[in-house]
Image (cartoon, rainbow, N blue to C red):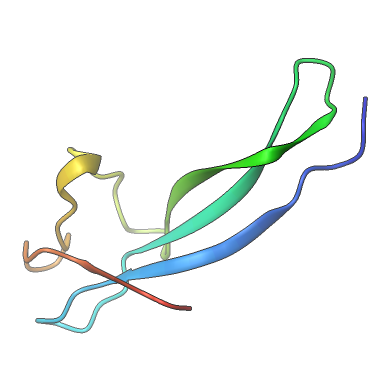
Length: 75
């Protein structure tokens, strides 16, 4: 297996209404089937707290606390 791929925090998703930060967006280096790292990256959505459920529709993320749309901000 090749070297480990990198994972970096790209942004956080924040609710402007209740100021909650339910999700984080990480960028992960992609790898070939043999484990060799590629120069390309993919995004991964991850809950910021243990009690945050996975989003029902990732294309339309809403705050799990109040339902308002989330905005992406720098970490």
